[in-house]
Length: 113
Image 1 (cartoon, one colour):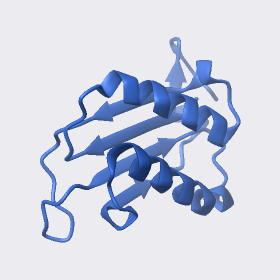
Image 2 (cartoon, rainbow, N blue to C red):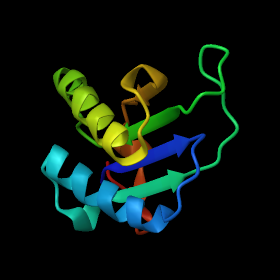
Image 3 (cartoon, rainbow, N blue to C red):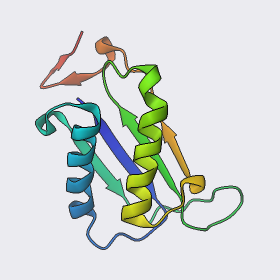
Image 4 (cartoon, helix red, strand yellow):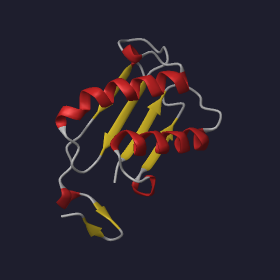
């Protein structure tokens, strides 16, 4: 059940197209079927990073069972994806990898734990 969210200050001409690309990218990255992935693209967000309004992004990757040791290699690949798709430098990207408890995440009316 990976959830991948890209919140960015940049304008995205086709956010749905980018969301589809992001969905396939994350499915491949975490090794889960794309049918389990939800991806969101939230462009044109008013944000600053380091006091500057230069293009930036805040990324979230939530997934049950996301191993801590995978976060660093995932961060490198996610930054490369965002840089390729949105031309945002990795030093202008924050990524959040929250730990999700199975009892606090639900789908289809039921929690996973």
